[in-house]
Amino acid sequence: MATAVVMPQLGNSVETSIISSWKKKKGDKIAAGEVLCDVETDKATIDVESPFSGVLLELFFKEGDEVPVMTNIAAIGEPGENAEDLRPTSAAPSEAAVEAVADVEPEAASSQQRATMGQLPVHHSGDGKIGISPRARHLALDKGLDVLGLMGTGPNGRIIERDIRAALSTMPKMTPLAKSMVTSGDFVVAPGVHPARITSRDLVVSASSPQAAASGVEAPPLSGEGEILQVIPLKGVRKLIATRMMNSLQTTAQLTMNASADARALLDYRKRLKGSSEALGLQGITINDLVLYAVSRTLLRFPDLNSLFVGESITQYRRVHLGFAVDTPRGLIVPVIRNASSLSLQALAQESKRLSIACQNGTVSPDDLNGATFSVTNLGSLGIETFTPVLNPPQVAILGVGNVNLKPVEESGEIVFIPHIGLSLTINHQVVDGAPGARFLQAFTRNLAELDLLLAL
Image (cartoon, rainbow, N blue to C red; front, side, top):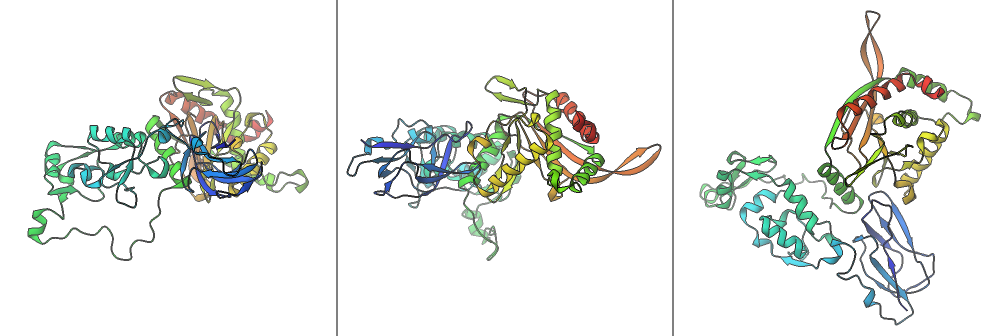
């Protein structure tokens, strides 16, 4: 009897995964435990193994397809068996799988809609038609939204309902005069203009209008010949990261506070570690490891920030499960140091190094990428002083770490220059007030300045 292979759930927060490559083709024999395909999430690349042996009867998706978790991706059985009943249908567990593809002619959009949304990238099939689900199409028509400007997030780039709702939330408004000018077909929004509200001053004469034809004026090109280096489609992990970043900003009220901490104790202790005996195994402990250690201890006093906000509930945690950003060739990955608040400095540094290497090599386990209660992202090595870190929901706070700079400070009536490290804390202001965030930053800066005392606790 033919049996389905499903897209695995690679972490609690992962809703879809992309099939990077098939390792087998239809008709091939496959053994249980043999790799069937590679799949990508916004966090890692994972091998999907066959759960049983047999012949690969069907592959239900192509390489590059984004597939909802727990959806049938292939069928395995005996030679000649029919596996069509296992092909994903309208009963598949996601909007992307349940909505059938409909085609909308690009010419059907109004000139006003093209003007407001035409600056976004267009996704369409080779026959010039746009793949869009019925629910998404009906919503777009009801709201007067042009689907020409949308990049779909459904399978094969199909536009689905969530894409329409996301576009509606960011579509600029028009003044009545600007709306009438655009509707006439003689004017369009000037290239590069992205105001919150479009007025007549944001419009230019359309190249196809009678005014432009009469004057002999040609619309200026967006770029000269040879100006474009390359055009990179937004797909794969980069597309998933982009979606998550946008969702973070759209679903949370983010507030960032900046501060700096006296870094003398931090730099001195790092110097001592680097000069210690190799037998102690402490030479590889980095500034970032020391920061992570201080964060894990400071958070124990601030459960408001060591929390997850899901639905209408805030869950606070006794221990700190610390996520930290790792820059990889595939994009940003955030592995998690479990029980970081219970680890010694040496153990924490070893776990940080293990996870960083696994992320760089693409071998990190899905279990190592989920469950963080707080995150840290460090751009100090790149010379960044302060920045605005973006939340990773359902976490309610994230700390950005900048570089070390000399800062003038008054001591005993004299101005002296003391090294300080830049810090940027972003909180979800829906559930965390500014005062608790400021108090955390205050306590954290004090712990960094008195690092030797913190290590003695």
